[in-house]
Picture 1 (cartoon, rainbow, N blue to C red):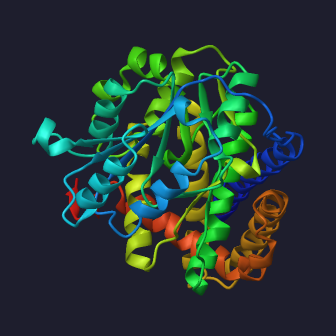
Picture 2 (cartoon, rainbow, N blue to C red):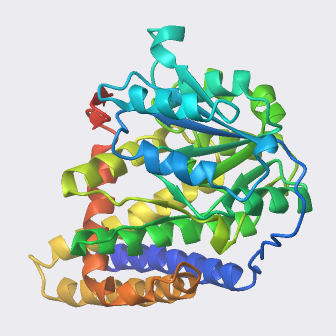
Length: 380
């Protein structure tokens, strides 16, 4: 019985390791897109933001967007207030008055008091968007001045209908936030590498781009009622219904969107629980297989550790499994970290590894039960 268990455990670890090494290879062999700031873009862009209780962040976000190195006649900013309970609306109104030509404000509770959430906000924004290209981001994000120029020049140079942009953390002041940066960088690296493989499985709504007519054609949000997942379900719907090669990852440093790490473990756990809660609704084979592989691989390490209570041999097996996984993870993260300039945090790699194994198992299990809180709302 023990031999069968070890065969399964190390077999799963072998699959995980092989996949991650291949993804590292794909990252290395995918060139970085260099933005030519002299290139004259032609596409009209609508930047869409769903904001709820973002009074602390929204001013910086809008200031960065107004300062974009992109013709003001070719882009607009549509901010949808999702029933904020702070003074987000007052700040939005001030910006809208000052920049009437570029900023539109939608108050979701005035359009439909019963509809809430980011999906409803995006649907209303797209309805009035004048742009051929929808660029979604979040109210707590910051941007390089060439962010839009990089996105559009990449879009106009390719035939992609959907573009996944890179996201990273900034303002990493605490030890915990620095650990989050390393872990989050790995998620974005995996996102990119699967896309280079023409089998995208993830994206991040902080930097997600798609054609307006594709959004209107797919009607993803009317088909999927999950509280979360405005980004990934649209991505997977496009993957299932559009020709292969319609989705690209923008590997450009100037296109990186910066957001804040979670301040506390409870916030972090709720965010990851929210992300993991979507997994049960996945119908895409690649997404389901990868999610299960990561969860099972980490679960087997935890199970092997528990079994060490009964036999010292399992202590050795746990160490060996952790060692193999850590080496493979380190290789992948090291390869990706050059792009994000995060090798300065690699001294946190080992403690982050132990933390990662535990939280993946916990969030994977608990996300399928009970509720989670997000933006002062409870979801089931």
